[in-house]
Image: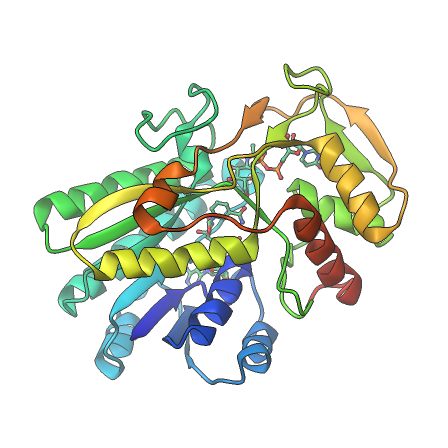
Length: 336
Ligand code: NAD
Ligand code: UD1
């Protein structure tokens, strides 16, 4: 079976490609390296010992997509490609709407023309907005997003539901990721943020490796056990394996469904710092700062639907997530 992976050179895409190839799938990657680099492809080859198709293209361009579908019999598409930085999306809304919606619309048009109607889409817990209490369940209302990035994910979910309503021969899984961290056990692939990280875990590991002086803890007056923000961190390899289960699901029938991919367990910022201190053997400095605008106190999943309907659950615990994040960061202090 052959899978087209858009954004396959990125953080989650590269881990998913490794798991797909190891499970015997043929993989074709399409990426324009907007937020990744070509060396990732060599590392995927090194880790799997297998080759795969690669097309350097912008997913908003239709011609390369038609070429991919003409040159390969693609059974299903996993669509990771998109921009993902919340703060940047506030400054550059047009670029975010153009890229994230543009990629998805062009991809779906090319899929329809090639009669390939099986799609796994990278959505986000951010679609639950500010008004739902955790644990978040797939049947809760979505929307009320607070930034253009989140709104693109919400809009794409609506677009894909309209697409299915217009033609119920499509089979679509909307995967709502919680907070992916960690890296492949080898330390050869991992998250490679540009500049100063926005997300907590890469920031902590950059402090541990000595690139940044201390961690800014955004608020310690939330209604949480220690006052700091609580999130549902999930190992990126567990997340990758969730995609394999979603592919099996969309191959088995038609329909559209959303699934939370999380562990169901929340950890606070201070717990994350302590856990990375343990993994790295380093003392980490932090300062308590004001709250970050738009942040929630707690955000964690009810992951039971994915277990029930996909037969998937996260297996890797916090200690393993931190050990693997640290191995990647310490082996690659400057990234790729
Ligand atoms: P990433 O930036 O590492 O990977 C995205 C990849 O898409 C990159 O390789 C980039 O070069 C490529 N890309 C972007 N625009 C493109 C275009 N126009 N044409 C071709 N390629 C393009 O991000 P990631 O963390 O691996 O996230 C993958 C997906 O999962 C994204 O859609 C993201 O929004 C979503 N997601 C990520 C998180 C997270 O915390 N990492 C959480 C929820 C959802
Ligand atoms: C962020 C995005 C969300 C996206 C998710 C996964 C925002 C408002 N939301 O969510 O849309 O889906 O990443 O990519 O950016 N923290 C610190 N110091 C830091 C960084 C973070 O204390 O330097 C805290 C935050 O306040 C939060 C927790 O750590 O409580 C996790 O933050 P982060 O990693 O940015 O993820 P989210 O806020 O869940």
